[in-house]
Image (cartoon, rainbow, N blue to C red; front, side):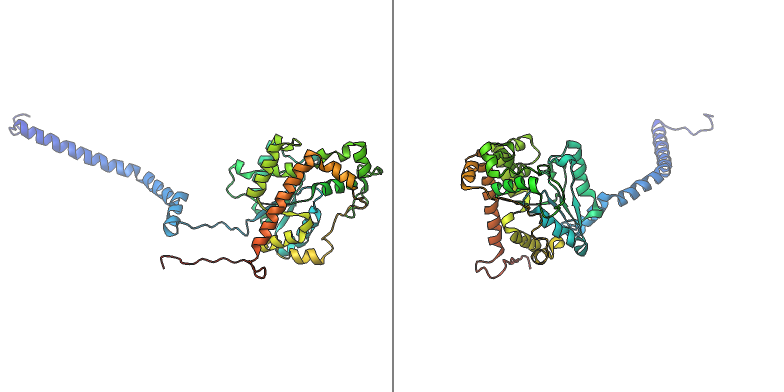
Length: 350
């Protein structure tokens, strides 16, 4: 065999070895390419069809594009404080929901509890956010403020509410439990037959007229924290004010219901279109009037107003009223004859 091969020097053997290695590597690369070709195609197809690639394409075309349908995804949450005129407002919503093509949903909590348990908080937040078949929607119920931002929700509902003078609300509720109202006149209330007046109740220092019963509007705006429901808590009052300013779209006062309805219709017509006219011309503007109510005497008023609870609840009411008056004032131009307008000017580059 050695005789048959030509005489080769070591350098020639080295060249032959290099050529063989290169040839083997080339052949192996071809086989690997064919072996992994389907997997490569699949990866490329997945990459092209992935949400990230689609988003990259969209961002390349319009980096600030926002496809969120604000009108059709609108959710308004009315965590109504008891005895503030909420029934009148909600019945207008029920009357117009079919015409305006939105849904109204009542939040009914076991035993009329105003605070949700943690599992119910999770369920409620997810329902309100993901129940697209019910949108646009107005949710309402006697429930304390719930901060949706704690649940990693991108689009929170719009909160609205009404407040009432605290003593007026307490007196109305006191007689409501005894005599009912014109909304469901045949329903027997739990204090039916008790004919003690509010004045006599205060003199006798009975629990039904205890100022602690006025501790309602502050916790409703404060929220689900334990301190919110501690009568006389300074922290709760401060938190209620913060939430009222930062978390609520609009808070009206019972004494100015029409103005409250007016502002909502001008601001959110997708749901509240036609509310002004319906409030004025229908028989729904003064529902749930207490059947029998005796105004408190001056002595009773002075007694109640000396309590810390009344002073704190009244402070929240005055705070809400100031915000509401400010909002109304900004609706009009300084001449009070034309609605405020805004426009974009000096847009550059041209």
